[in-house]
Length: 253
Image (cartoon, rainbow, N blue to C red; front, side, top):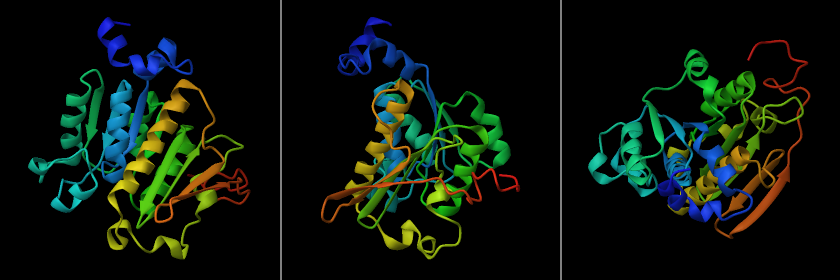
């Protein structure tokens, strides 16, 4: 590793859980990040800063004034700019060693098929259930770990779905059509620092999966009530009748 990179990542390399070998794994890794809003802003900045070598950023929205309360990768002068391009400019300024690929449209199934082959991990930083269901099914189809986060009002949650035969998936947790899915984040509101907390944990889970240290949130749902600052960890089980991941179901992903 070059001296400049050794200095840049020195505080991580000092950790025995990472060391030079782990840092090289980060540099050689590729992460697909879907959503450059409140969660995606934080995830993208920490992954770029930590040395993830390749980031694929996906978002079809433009930067708006109302985004800036929480979407910290964007700035006032970027209003009207595509979010992926706005984010790329800031991330390249933060760490020019990270390769940034931008996709300024919603990925359909064919789009996933095109970009997924070299991706190590998928990060879901979207803000609606339909996108989360679709991304979950793509992670199962392509057998890629999925780091999922959500935040609304004063509450947030994070989990890791590992897309293996024994691991629960997002649809094991939330089935389609439940009443909880009717209210979007834009309708319910959200407090800004909550997105920083949840997004930071998503980034941490990505680093742990890439390097292979610690214990991931696979099989657990971590919940935060920020009004009381209380955390809860809930065990998740695979649903044998899950429409997305159960082998007993015969319909396609």
